[in-house]
Amino acid sequence: MRQRVSKAFTLVEILIVVVILGILAAIVVPQFTSASEEAQAGNVATQLQTVRSQIELYRVKNNGNYPPSLVAGGADAWDDLLPDGAGGNNEYMRTAPVNPRTSSSSVVIGADLDASDAAEGWIFDDTTGNIFACFFDEVAYNDGNADTDPWTGP
Image (cartoon, rainbow, N blue to C red; front, side, top):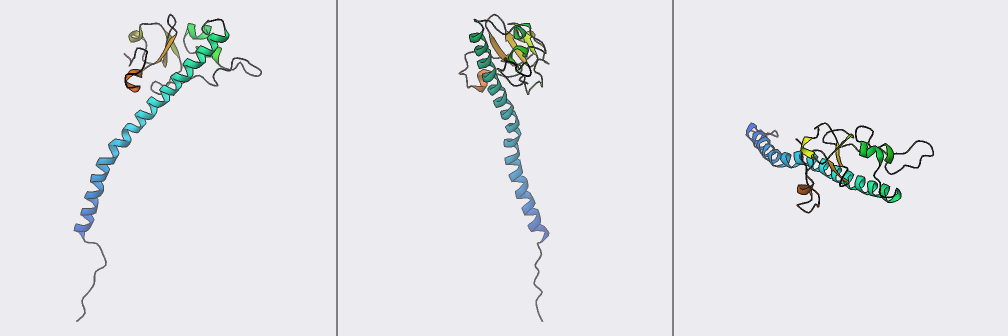
């Protein structure tokens, strides 16, 4: 009599593979969930660096004055730094920067950063010339090496 040779997996073998995959997923998935947060923080930090350098470039070219639209704040705060259209000469930035944490490019003015609206994207202190991003802790991002005060929102 011939013995029958089975070429299929048993239920126990399949369960062991499923458990191993579950353990691996439990280890790997939390690492990917923080990747989105890190990408947002990197995006905001890069935008802050670009915005600060473009504001400083504007000041150098305009006798130490800040862009009037930025000092006024609001949704049109970036107008003096954006292209004027065909042949425009205000090409410090291609588009208004959008804070990915609030999805807003509008600017609120003032040094009382805790009183600002959570829907704003940026905060401009017109007395010191500092610009901050809403809901972004710059000191924590830079491991405590930033030389500006952090603001993490209301």
